[in-house]
Length: 367
Image 1 (cartoon, rainbow, N blue to C red):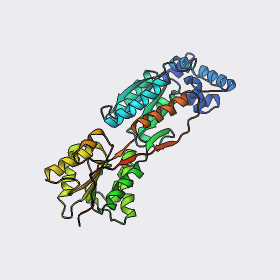
Image 2 (image 1 turned 135 degrees about the vertical axis):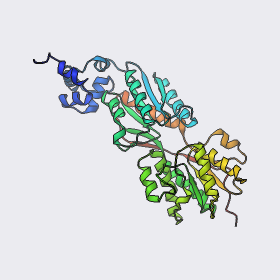
Image 3 (image 1 turned 180 degrees about the horizontal axis):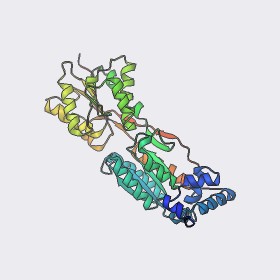
Image 4 (image 1 turned 90 degrees about the vertical axis):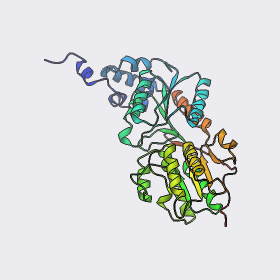
């Protein structure tokens, strides 16, 4: 018996914006602006999109949103850990900027767990947020379906802190590779050649070859890979051979950093300097130095990533890479809100500059 009118479509699930766009003969961005109720669309194209949506049965929440602009005036924010001072600063920048333009924010943490991130994205879709800013744990095409699902429902997305090559999206990041290169160059200029790298992309075995590390970097967080490449750039520029024994591999936890630095300190030709790419990597390294009865910068020079107030009050104060955390959040929110106001997404990676705060944890290699 023939299906009742509309029954077949309901059985296959709610039509997507991509299907509406194809039916109307327009791009997905145009369909998204029309059905999402943001940005300018010519009357002719708007009529075509709405007619296609009507034909396909694209109604319910999505079509209701198209009748007004900014129905919820709410942005969704997904970060790894709101308790991390870095992400707390980024979220503060997002909230300050969005509030000034009349938008509230919903913030969710994922703890670098992709399943938690997928669940968080679904929550924000259900909450009908107008746009999403996400520091994603996804790294390749197989892991981005949830982000594409949000976009398919007319929800614009901006990436913050991490880029994802599989997605053509606006992203706001810092100059991770250049920052890492500058840090390691500073240690090299002080005479150091045995420089440990703490907290990069995990590798399947230890020690991992240069090729294995770079391959693993491409399968893990973008920031980890960029900082590893900066370390390698500085070594290459100074013609210092890469030594896999000087690179931490394994889980990114403070305890592992302590173990790995202790191992590097026990090598026959031990490290004389450390570059730590996260706050927990720095504290793990400091524990290992203390346990070995060593100090910085007398025995081991040290530069860390992600400056914070405690680094300045250490004795001696630590040289650190300062990230423009508030500015990262501000810029991500501005880009998203501009899209909601009708600006065409640039589909570009906007890179902010970090700076190295030089204090007292680097000293020349004793002769």
